[in-house]
Amino acid sequence: MILRKTKFLNKNNIKMNRLEHYWGKYYPQFVVTSYWLLGLTNNFAYVIMLSAAHDILSDQNSNSTDLPKHNSTNRFDCNELSTGAILLADILPGIAIKLVAPFFVHKIKYWKRVVVVILTNSASFLLVSLTPSNLKPLIFLGVMAASFSSSFGEITFLSLSTLYIRTLSITGWASGTGAAGLIGSFGYAALTSLGLSPSSTILLMLFIPVLMALSYIALPTVDFARSRIYSELDTDSEERDKDQTESENNAGSINNGSLKDKFKLLPPLLKFMIPLFLVYFAEYFINQGLFELLYFKNSFIKEHKLQYRWYNVMYQLAVFVSRSSIKWIKIKFLPIFPILQIINIFVFLSHIYLDYFPSIWIVFLLIFWEGLLGGGCYVKY
Image 1 (tube, helix red, strand yellow):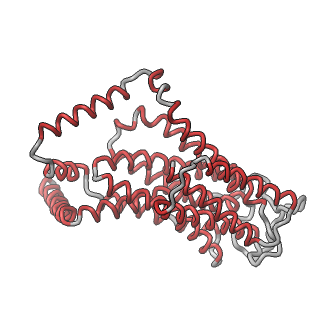
Image 2 (cartoon, rainbow, N blue to C red):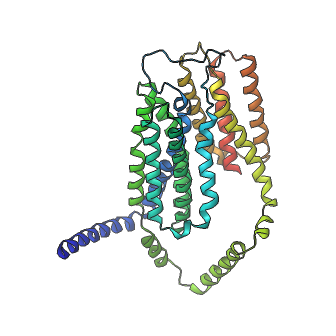
Image 3 (cartoon, helix red, strand yellow):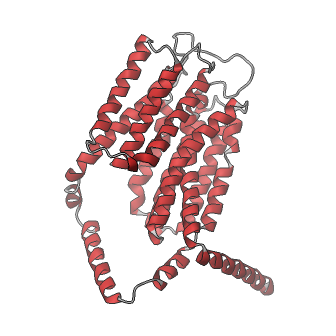
């Protein structure tokens, strides 16, 4: 028994030595690629739940040839429950975990946190895809699992990123999370448009937590990252230690301050917090409150649920474009973002009440404009 255990440990050591060899040779590539994939997989479930919101709430969660059940009471063809309910289930658990996690998360090892993220990510896809449409509470539990997974994963991977070269880890993470919106929404819309049912499409996404696990395994270990940092330290250790001590003292003064002292730090941040709040309030109000009311019966996209899916794709495409190109566009008057986004609310609302847009293409253009503002605000603020 002892001999078998020794052989097993030796095999693991050989594998780790091989990995460390490649980590040392291609360290930047491993960090950027792993963090890009971690960002992609971490936000993927969150995006899928929002893209599938109309289908999740529908009593007919399939692409069968039977005629769909329509709401005959008005021209909007709405579900009984608004897609805003999915938004709440996809956000509130995340807010809760971000509020309480700082008090205990540092006591949990990183690999254990990642296991929790992977398990809840998997549970979200399984619960939403396999639960019958009449068991709405269980479906909402699946959406809440996606929210928990995404937020807890963000806390975990961003705190872990400080142990690597931040220009590598944060760059990969930011790009990966941005790609998650576009790839997730487009992938869901494309697969369902090709005839795959919404439940089967969501079940197919189970490869995402597997990819997350592989990405974490490929990421250089914490011990390896630390040893690399120590080996590259300058010989002038005295000056470095002095700077480090000063930074730690400054950080300690903030962390050890009273609650009243921490609240004093808020007023200077309000000029950023309030515009960001207004922009995202307007975005979510449009996306989860008004998208399902933008129904064109005579459009080239006939089905209401298909129109909703492609609205989300257009929005995510615009956000991706805006975040990628904002460094070439300089905007100094930052309050313009919330002002224009709130104007968008009234434009969409006026059409919903007056029905004056002649074509769905106008809605696509407005949604693209809305996404550009959202992505630009995220980067500029």
